[in-house]
Length: 51
Picture 1 (cartoon, helix red, strand yellow):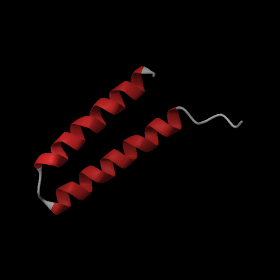
Picture 2 (picture 1 turned 60 degrees about the vertical axis):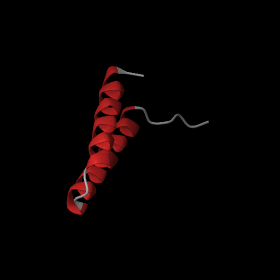
Picture 3 (picture 1 turned 180 degrees about the vertical axis):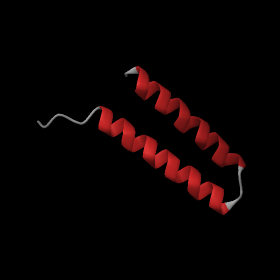
């Protein structure tokens, strides 16, 4: 994994941890959106090669 992916994974885990401790619906939706954006960034960094 590249350094950027490791950084994104670390942030995703941090946000998941935060989400497990928060009960505010609006905050949870925001965290979910942040996680989805980071997953998209990871996918953009390493697009799958066609077989």
